[in-house]
Amino acid sequence: MKRFQDWAKREYSMRQRLVAIIFEGVFFVLICPFLLVVNSAEIDRSLHLPRFNAGLVNSIVCLLFVVVGFFLALWSIQTQMTIGMGTPVPMMPTQRLVVKGPFTYCRNPMTLGIFVAYVGISVWMGSLSAIVIILILIGILLIYVKLVEEKELEIRFGFEYLEYKQNTPFLLPRLRRRS
Image (cartoon, one colour):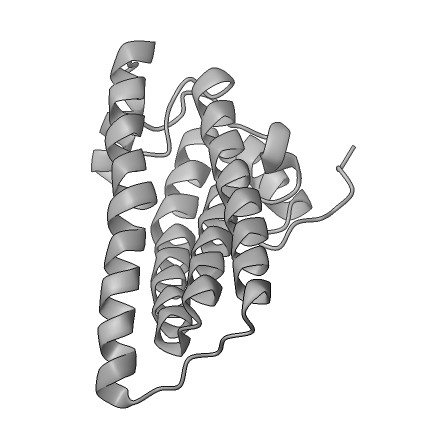
């Protein structure tokens, strides 16, 4: 936990934050989806899992989920960078508690956005194993957020974070903004 606190004490320039976001973006927008497509296709073949394919429906659902998911993730990143003066990268955390923009609806909109986008990719592929892989990885990420990230935010932001945590859902958004 001390390492997170040390990282939080340092302020980073917009250029440093943009470089970190570019590397993170390459990982989550290019590398992870590529690995998901390649590995789940191989798993499906190895386990003789059927593909679910409804033709054009798969593509439409994919497009909708990917666009909505990545929009939510990008909106979250933009909000963290401009309002929070930080990034989603743990080594460059926000300097301020972010409770505006997508963080008004849930505490983890970026995680939700990535999950939705990756489910969209899984539907496009018609892959059961891809959906299982995504559920496992998101489950691990959510455990990390609960056990590490939330504790660190409580230490850094104290009562302000505890109040936000009490009034804002963890992952599934509240469609009405809180007042």
